[in-house]
Structures are given as C-alpha cells and as structure tokens.
Image 1 (spheres, rainbow, N blue to C red):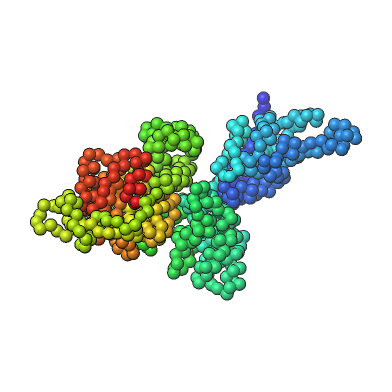
Image 2: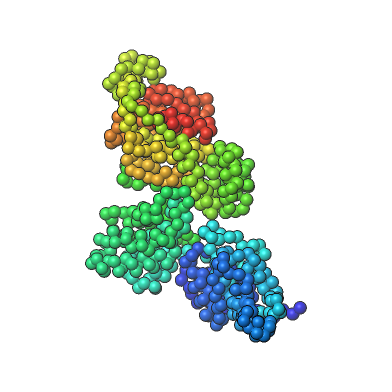
Length: 627
C-alpha cells in the first residue's frame, strides 16, 4: 500500500484566546483526521471552525444536532412524488448534508453532537472509518479526499446531553476548549462592542465570576459580557449617568443580560437575580469604585502563564466575617482546602469506586444506595469528595452535598414550641441552682461570680450561635456532622429564634452572621470545604460567640459548641463564659477523654452535653438543644 505524503499545513493566523487550539485543529484537518470540539457554550467552537475553513478555502456544510435529526435527514432521501412517477432513480434522490459534504470535498460541521440520537450517529461509523456509506437503493457513496467531519458538543453534564458511544469517540480526535483568559475575553468584548475599558472590565469580571459561583451549575459565556456592555452603555446614556455612579444601572443590565444564561444548581433555593446580586457585591462592593481593568473579582488568582486556558476563579466559598458586615478569611481559607486524590479516596472509602467509577464521574444513584445502607459511610465519602483533586468530581460532590446535608439538616431542625419555662442561666438574678453550681465550682471559696448557675424564667425569644471546631483532624464524617448541624441551625431560624454559625481553630471565622439571612446551602458549601488545621483555642471561640450574640434582642443567648473540647491553645475555656446564658456541647465522634472534657465544659456553661457518634444521632440532639 502506497502512502501519499501529507502536505505541510499553513501557519494559522492568530485567534483571540484560541491560538493553540487552532493549531491543533489545522494540523488535524491537514492529516485527514475527523475532530470533535468540546467545550461550554460561547467558547468559540463555531468561530474557530469557520476561521480555519476560510483559511483553507473549504466549504462548510452546517447541521444543527438535536433529538429530531433522523438518519434520513442527515444522509438524504428519495422524493416520494418523484419515486411514484419514475421509480427509485438516482436523480430522484435528494442529498442530505452528509452526502453533500462527502461529494463536494467540504467540511461537515455537526453541532451539538451529544444531543443527536444514537441511531443517527451510528450512520457515521463507516463514514469515519472507510470514507464511504451504503445508501439503500442508491448504492455506495464514496467521500472525496477533502471530506472531514467536525463535530461540536457541550460537556456531558449539560442539560439534555448524552454520552457519545465509544464507536464514534474512537474514530475522532478530541479538542477541548475552555473559557479564554480574562485579557482575551476583554479583547473579544472590545472588538464586538467598541465600548470603553471600565464597562468591559466590569462585564468580564461579572461573567467570569458566574462560572465558579458555588450556587450555579452553569455560568455565562463571553456572549453575556457582550450583551451586558451593550445594555449598560445604552442605559447609562438614557439615564444620563457615568459608570462610577451607575451601580444600580449595572445591576439592571446584569439581570437582563445574565439571568437567562446562568443555571442555578438543583436543590439550591435561590433565584438567578439573587446570585447575580451577590456576585455584583463581590466584584463591585457598595460605596466603592467599579473594578479597574485587570483588577478582577476579589480572590481571583493570576492568569496562567502564556495565556493558557481554564475557568476563571470566582468568589471564594470559604468567605467569612469577623464583624457581621465585613468579610474576613483566615489563612487556611485563603489557601483553600487541601485536595484528595483518587488513590487516597479508594484507601479511605470502600465504596469510592462504586460512587465514582471514572475520573470526573459521580454516580448519584450509587450514592443514594450507599446513603440508604450506611448513612455515615456515605456522608463521610461525600464530605471527602468535596475536596477531591479531580475538579469535575469535586464540583459535582459539592452540588450534591448542598442538597443532601441540607435535607438531613431539615429533618433534624424540628423544635418544640411552648410558653415560658424555668431554665438554668448564668445571669446574676433568679434562684440558685445548687447542683449545677457545685458541678462547675472550682473549689475556691468564696465562689466566683462565673461559677454560679441560677434558674430563671425565659421566654421563646432566643439567640443561638453554633461554633464549629475546625482544628485537628477535621475530615470525613466530622465535616459531614458539622455541615448538617450548621444546616439545621440555619433552617431553625424564625421570628422567635435568631441563629449564627462560626468556625474556629486558633482564630475565628463567621459563616452565618446573626440577624443576616444566608442560604443553608451556602453555609454547607463553606463547611464541606473545611479541613483540620491549627490548634484548638476554645476561649477564642467562646469570646467570638459572645460578641456575635451581644447585639441580639433575646431572652436567652445560647452557644452550641461542636468540638471535642480538648483545648490546645489559649486561656482556659471557663474564663470566656461571661455573657453566655447557656453553653451546650455537641461532641462529635468522641473519645473517653473528649467526653469528660465536654461534660465538664457544658456543666460549667449551665448546659448539656450531647455525644454524636453517628449522623443519625444529630437530629435528635439538635432537637433537644434547640427545643
């Protein structure tokens, strides 16, 4: 068999943000390969193909793939009226796009490949392998030497997509397109709109932030930034405003341009507009100037060297706040949670391979089966998957964790309703509770004021602060217990119960400020990103909870501490109990030493200790403490 030399491809012209992908596609076509371009909507798949086709002088036959594309519509078919008049003659056959491209040495561009029915795709197998197709009653049609199939498709997890069979995938090269760099996207928007740099910088920053937001399954493409700039420019002119004073105008434009392009994650009870408002607050905080070109959203990482591909980092999920209105991140949050590889997952969790059979895959049916059989094992696995090295798997696990842990927390959030009742407190008024005072008394006479426990009437207005220990070996089931507890506390809030959530090690982060609503899913996503680090400073935690509860209008201020209570740094915990009416302790996965320490601290705080050895223990424990 003789082999014809392959002509050297011409040097491709530069393409904004897709230079390397264009080179690969150019060489693939020159070496007689068929190619599938895979990437999210708006990453330039069609633009890239048409640019290469124009450069090579080839015609493009376009086919829009969908569930209605039958083999006959792709290949072609006989004209029924002509067949009735003259029979099955070649001239009575109307070529479909496939035969048109095969006969004419053109490129067949098959868009949305993974939305096409399998029986239609099977028609292509022989075409891709042998360059020919047998058409009933017409005969075999051979492709000319210039014929190529270029397909495009969205990632598999996009709505309405299906996996492409191995028989097709094995016969095509695959070029993956990601979102362009921030500089490239600004250049694209500028080229289309001709707008000024400030509007372009703002639009691109907002759009890029939607792609990594924890509550969004799908973010916006650069098309959203183009529309946002055009709407923003028009609205500013109509209202006679400058961009610096037009933050509300930018909000209106963002809602119109982006709300229909983004998709909120299943199980997250938020509107697209609410998520966009949060992103705008991150990118353009109230009272500040709009972002400058290259500034990006807070927490954005630098672009890869050489203008590489990849999604832009969005707002961090680990944002907290020391004061209710001022975000704060500790050092570990800035670094982000440590990631876990597949090999480590397999060693740690027996069911890992069943729940994640392939890289990037999370089988929710398998997880549901594991959750029914062994909730603790399932919760521990899901919490670890949320920090997997595999980005696609990590993203899927975080979306699932937001749904699962919030649902479990909702079940455990039931509270008792009642009238005023006598409860132990640490206020100076009321009757002395002798038993509880003796339990916490240090033995020094006379007893200090902080050693006294009284009994007093309390109403139903309470402020509760959950304080989660993130020190030590915080992982797996411990993270799951913390996430479910936080969801339960947040969901318990109503007009009679104010709630807040803090985390601590040797410093403090506020996840849910008191009196400020935040979705339970948001808090869960923060917590599943935690991994143990630092020392345990219980005094810092209790003083932070006291500050959080101080402004509350409530009859009782309660702290629920989720910790083993084994302090390794700072002052003794009992020195920080002033200003807390009651301290309850949830002791997760306790050792004997932890149980003793937790009982003693709860007694000194005038509360109770609840051991949590399993996820199933948590609902009842929360009900008893919040009831």
